[in-house]
Each structure stands twice: as C-alpha cells, then as structure tokens.
Image (cartoon, rainbow, N blue to C red; front, side, top):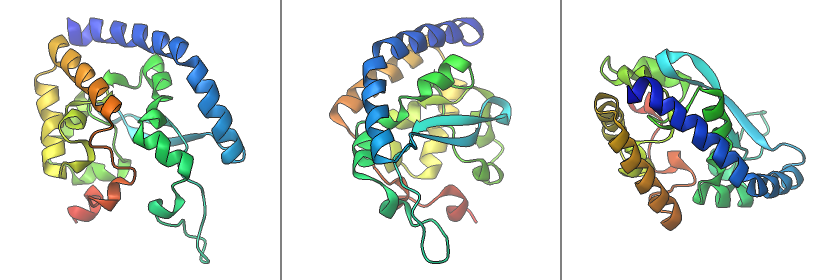
Length: 202
C-alpha cells in the first residue's frame, strides 16, 4: 500500500511544499547562475528511471562548457565553477529535482539515477534498482555517498528495493538532512575518487 499509493502522495505533497518554501532560494541561485554562466542555469541529462524508461534529470549547472584545442570538453575538475563547487558542497545543485519529483519521474527516496551508459555493466540483480523510481537521495547516499565503491553502492540500492517501507524512507530522509547540514561525504568531483562504472567493469 505504501509503495503503490502513499509514497507517491508523500512525494507530491513535499515536492509542492518544498518548491513553495524554497522559492526565494530558487530565485537567488537562479539569478546568480544566470549571471555567472551567461544565461545557462540548468543542466538536463537523460537518465534511466523506473523500468529503465529514460527521463531528463534537472540540476543546477555547476560546470562551464570549456573545451580543449580539439573541441573536446575539459575534465570535470577544470570545468567546475566556484559557485558550482559551493552548490555541490551544500547539495543545492540537486534542488531542481523537486520538479522531477512533482512530474513523477523521480521520488524523494530511491536509488540515484545513474548514467544510461552504465546499464550494460549491471548484473541482473543490480538491474533491480530500476524496479522503483530513482530518488534525490537513497540508502547508498546516507551510507557513504561517493566514498563507497561501486559494488557497495549498488548493493545498497538493491537492499533498499528489497526492503522499501515508510520507516526506511523516513530514516533515510532524516539522515540525509543531517548529512547535508554537516556536508559529510560530499565530493565535488566524484570521478576524482572513484572510476566511472563502465571504466571499472570493462
């Protein structure tokens, strides 16, 4: 009952509530990014959602589009802006995902939506992470976030799917708030501490 009905109702209520409460913050961040990024505010990227149906995740744009002489984008660490680093450190770059939750292609709690190109590298068990809606935060995020190796991170995703409940979601939600406040386990450039999944499993 919780998974099929109440979880979505909670998502809708808190997404609307969050968008209203944080609207002044949205306005401030959007204005600063519009100025610093010369009009480019949001980062949209296709990600696999529930049942591996693709959707566009919405985040604040934290990197510029600088390229090398061959026209290839520079490494993430060289494109991350000063404002972008602050947004990532405080997790405020994730704020626009309230829109994803409102639309219904994401939930507050669930496995994080990873890159499409990772799909062929999951085991059959790991692909169960796509049997629920992806989340803004999840069990892996409160268990170490980017400091976890891929096997541990994906194992946490499956653990969440197999034990999904209101109490588990509430626990993850409260622990996420704590981690955001103290900025624990936040890595501004994730691939500086862990390889991309497709590179690791090739």
